[in-house]
Image 1 (cartoon, one colour):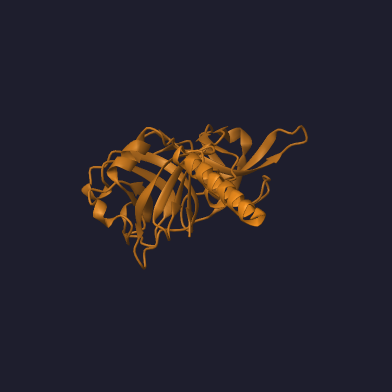
Image 2: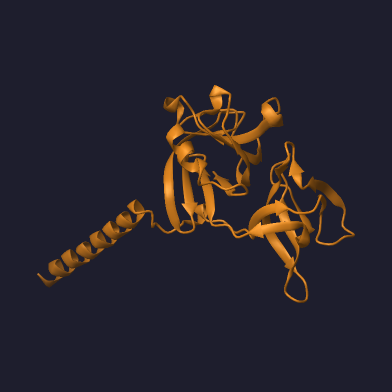
Length: 240
């Protein structure tokens, strides 16, 4: 009998713990998993007219790219800083940033004085295999739902990217709203040379499938929810 009582007590404890975890998840308080976590320095804008991106954090290193303060249309150019090198006084001297363009995943170093960075709390996680997204703000899961991703031959790329611009589309295929990302699809004949977007869809029955040219499609109600909550420069992590 004591063993039965102990077993029942243990089961009650386990059920109570499971209920507590489920309750926190429903309330948006689930602890971020390793897949939904990111490790970046910050994001922000370029404040110099143009800045050289170096292969290593020193002026003698080869220049691998040049970024300007503004994009076409006089829109500020946002960057995502992944790492920092500090000077002897402990102040940032160089930042390693993500470089948009092919191939995906390129990085380089820029002078810290060239950037105006802010800490990062929000991020969008896309689970390509499960075809789902999560929108996090710090340790709070704000929203999640189904997505459509790239079809065979045009798979949505894996990696850490960021939001470069946002706009209301005129093309019906982009749904009610869209974010341009720093990622590029395998297809080069897509608009912008294959830029991967995160956008809505007027065909929600396609969600949960591999049907796009590499873009991530969300239900229109989800993309409209994110419209005013996603800042430029926000990280987007696409995992397998």
